[in-house]
Amino acid sequence: MSRTVVLELLQALKFKSPVPDTNLLLLVQFVCADIGTRLAESTIIQKHMISTLPGCTTAAMECMRQYISELLDFIADMHTLTKLKSHMKACCQPLHEDTFGGNLKVGLAQVAAMEISKGNHRDNKAVVRYLPWLYHPPSTMQQGPKEFIECVSHIRQLSWLLLGSLTHCALHQGSTSCMPIPLDAGSHIADHLKVILIGFPEQSKTSVLHMCSLFHAFMFAQLWTIYCEQTAAAPSLQNQNQTEFSSGAILTGLEFWSRVTPSILHLMAHNKVMVEMVCLHVISLMEALQECNSTIFVKLIPMWLPMIQSNLKHLSAGLQLRLQAIQNRVNHQCLQVQSPGAPPIALRKWLQCTQFKMAQVEIQSSEAASQFYPM
Image 1 (cartoon, helix red, strand yellow):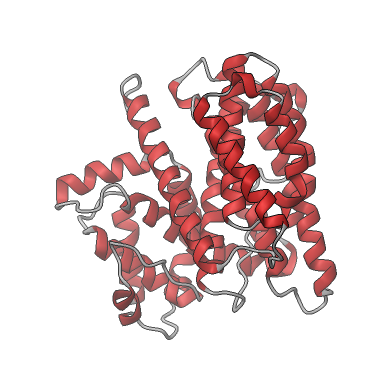
Image 2 (cartoon, helix red, strand yellow):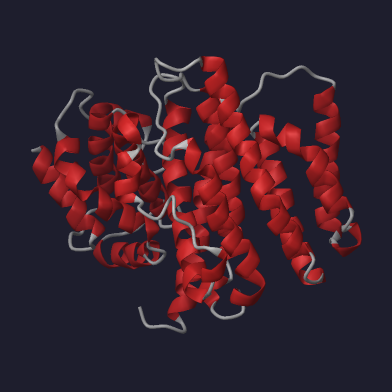
């Protein structure tokens, strides 16, 4: 039966089988249950539906393992959600077309993240096998249009993987870890991000596909920051000191920002339009990290606030109000003693919003591109 379920799921992901949205997510949940995770509740798949599926091992992951690369390709393809939307309209009545694609990608990302994480416990060979480019960002001499679009694609794929990992963490507080991306890859990922930040002023003019690259860069930065903090809170491996492991994870997040921030400042030096665009993303980033009670945010806010405040004259009234609200909350939180880390409810809420935003931007980018390029 497990083999049949997996093959039906793969056929649906190739748009060869007319499976309704709820049933498709239940197929994903069947695989999730076997590998030790579960989908988040949503308007499409409720708690009682998830609980009706087997809680025991079904060998579904054994059948799925050889297709992990196909799952990663589905997650990485910017056009899959648009194709999925059209396919669903053709084969059944889509009741959740705005949220279904994001839920599906995150569910598949959970499966891939759990499998990579389990393989990484030995020597990180799993992540290198599935993401061979991870430790090899383009050099400064190789940063042309091809490298730019490849980095955007890689960062989007990593963002979905981190969403899958963090969704598992939010649903299984401390019970099982899911760490698909090793922390020692942080500096290499920062170099991928720098290619996007440095190339954005020029490359964003060349194609509608490039215009949202800044959104994806800052969205990944949010996810990586929270990922480092959740990793710090997770139980360490048996041969590691918990305090040393936790502080190392936080330092990884801080080092990431030390490598990325100069490129952000360089981007802001271009013109007034670029200043407002970057400030919008940084303010959104600060709001998200503040909502998640981020430890790294507290350490970086003394650097971020002056960076934005020095450009106040270029900001709209709305952005200035949002910045003031961030400052007010910082001042208020300084008077309170808070435990670091996002409460589970706040983390789940933020993950749902992030998942929705990423899915919508991918759909909008794909639909805009299809007006210029045949798909």
